[in-house]
Length: 378
Image (cartoon, rainbow, N blue to C red; front, side):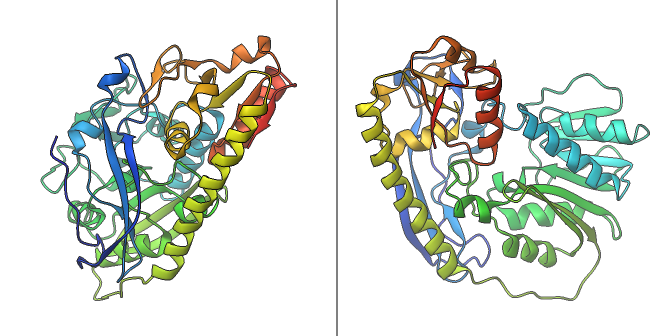
């Protein structure tokens, strides 16, 4: 596999990257697999920061066909994600798009929510791994969106949800959307609130798929640089997502690139120091605990903790609510995944739970519906 070098800042294009931290032999796939552990693909995950802008970014990159060879179900399971898709559809409804192109709408949940609000709308999805239910109003294009994409359907808006943070070249991506739309047409999207996520030490913020620390100053900058004026912005919870509506119009503005170096370097260094200390504490607790120990989240949440040094040998099972992950192995580990329902019969169970914005939802579900005696290590 040939990794992709990204030696220049994705925003200023300057070759001024400073090394921050490298995670050795990190699993590329953030999901569950059926093959033997010796077939897991692992690559060093190295993070850098631009001196000119403070953009934190991954270098080198994994080729897209390797990284997205199969889906891992992110964004399709759980009450919080359902609330997100519903809220974003309602946000879109304020602007009333009728002929929508959605980039990366793999599971079709956003389309279903919006079409329930606006049954007369038409929806096209471009996605490499679609799992969309049959609906005559939804047209599927299998593939990746890029500068050469031409829509066969008439569109009046481009939509994407939790896609921008996956894009290797966000400036080029935004330019491609701008070229596709005419003046007065809209660009509506949802992105994770990465600033607050990294500040709160969430392990699903940046990884092999989220390769740029894409905070609001940088999003605002690339929109303005590509002839978009922000007409609406809404926060979904304080630590989950930001919804944008931007209208395409020719502008003569030449915005200055953000300078977030000191702030972002400090946030990232705090993030690393925090997790090293957390792992020391968790390993000490596990050594002294007499009952069964579980780790929640068969996803990037667990992979980060394990790579930081969490003692895998003391963990009985991984837990996850996604039935497609259960009775499979998390890539990069020896851990098998079970339903949280097994906690009903567990002896003095302790659950390590570091699930970011989903923390309360997961914890309350286990305590209210499975076993009120579970002890959580958070």
